[in-house]
Image 1: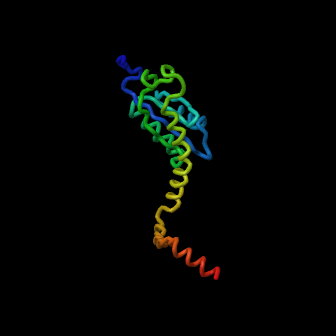
Image 2 (image 1 turned 30 degrees about the vertical axis):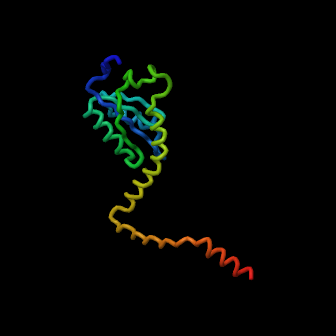
Image 3 (image 1 turned 45 degrees about the horizontal axis):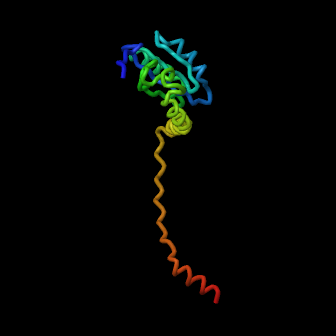
Length: 153
């Protein structure tokens, strides 16, 4: 395998997923551009891909997550943009990781609802845990046969 030379040495890339009833990836991208401070921002179908120096990326994410913290999620990217080991230009088709994003994205609305519920309940006493129902023993086949025969006679 050829040695890899990173195009954006010293940077990090993070994905920002948006699953919000009040914000689209385009709207989030506009807000991100306002505070980007040299961070490379790419709008995607699921949100944003941001690349830059770690401190600048963290500041940007802190600002944009504050807009809708229950519906904006962040994930590190494993390989840098353009990495020939994973780039679709070299492999053909979509990056394999995008299939994982698709699956994860479907779960985000449920996580968002859970976070909203946690915020709503903050300071309240937790609901009591209901005791587990007693397990019933299964009806033995011989006993079933006896019951059927007794009903027939």
